[in-house]
Length: 236
Image (cartoon, rainbow, N blue to C red; front, side):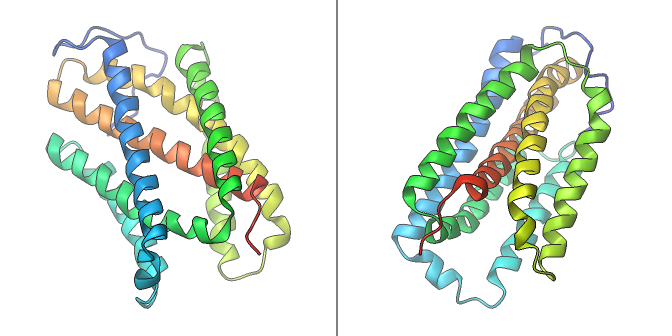
């Protein structure tokens, strides 16, 4: 998905008939469906002991992690070539795989912490999405800061796989919350840019909506995880 167009450009009516408002509603609708799939699979895995059977596969967590990365990379790189149906399938597949991974949190954190983190995430996400979508913010100036923050977070968690960095986890989670609040506003703003850029190509407009939904979905999930790690109470 080409994102080199200007974020500040005005939008135009899509050739296939959808207004910007309807296009935006569809995008958030896809995101919402993805979240339902993820949390539905996570709850189902927890209640049916499905995670127990998955965990018996050697290296299961790394296999799922690699699968998630592979799906996102493939969807990002091939979305221009794939059909709308395939793009939607890949998004929902990612949400389902992520649900298996998420079921672990039901074993680590108590239910109250999970609901509290979800409520806070929904509130923060909603506020930042509104600010980003309706605000007149120059995100091009913030892009280097966001990229540096994401690289730092990825580097920290990668390093933590080999070195015990638990003493710094609270600080890093606070940084992660701050970074993804900004990224949420940025990705919400991109909905308008996608609409303007692809509005005259019906199929690409639909695929760009799914792609934008994936980005917002990832923002919500990451914000939830960092908030859960920051305020959540672990089971004893």
